[in-house]
Length: 395
Image 1 (cartoon, rainbow, N blue to C red):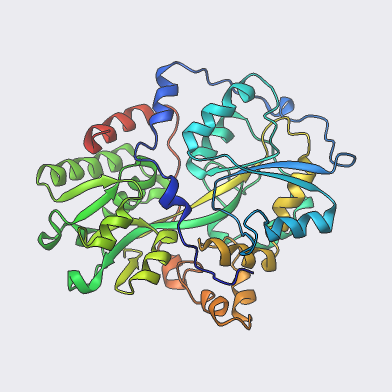
Image 2 (cartoon, rainbow, N blue to C red):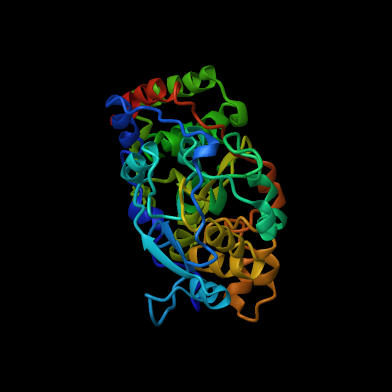
């Protein structure tokens, strides 16, 4: 495991763009066809038995690395030694929509992508699943996934039972605030709208990243939210923008604003706050009483992948508690394998053992009761909702 379990910079801090969703809107505007692929047309002859390799596309800064040699990735190295399967690991995913645009021509035209595993955010996974662009996994070959996947992540609306997607890492979109400077607690989303935060609060600019927490603050059940829930939330935002209560809508630059004190409270990702707290112990992260969204970025096997069994083996490997613990210690996101907590807790390394008690990696039972995963937007809903959202946010 890494000697220093706190990463120097969050992956989201470096990569989340302000205009999340713009790529999807552009594709819709160009009239890109739905190009659904039927189940019988998704698989290709699997070469795994004779061709011991696979190609794995992921986001940058999202895996464990050797402190002395950043080119080495210990968990992948161990998998290769154990199985004899060579892994071509590329950090090529910088934005969900951009990557969708990159590989969609091949998928809609029934061609190979050259990748056996891809990792994208669940709201984007929903689009791949809906289009029939990813294959169902053989869970009989993945006993660790079947046994160890967090129950809170097992039944997203777009892939009930997780047959086509498996979380790589997870996280919470909640509220971060400077308790010392604010001088009070934040327990509810509505606490953000009090007068002492006028002009000192920011929200995320990406609709898919932001909307769930805001609707939950109004009492909506985001597992089955409606258009009325969405418009009630956006009407509220319009009023807050008009009153200049919201300082601005941000990407990950909220980190700089909160650190400098220009902002006292903001919508934030749990993975970022771990680093913020290391630098400033006055920063707190809150799952509001009304709830917050538990999200995931998930692994999928795209259509016509030539090394499906090898890919299934790698996915299952990362669900061994010892491996999941090693990854969690490196990236500091919510671990989708609760059993990894016991592995870290038993470590002789004090910093690693402390990670087992960090609720931003292993949420407490109280936090878990307030976490939910929002249903995904349908293709029919998205253009109208994006138009409303972008007008408010100023995109």
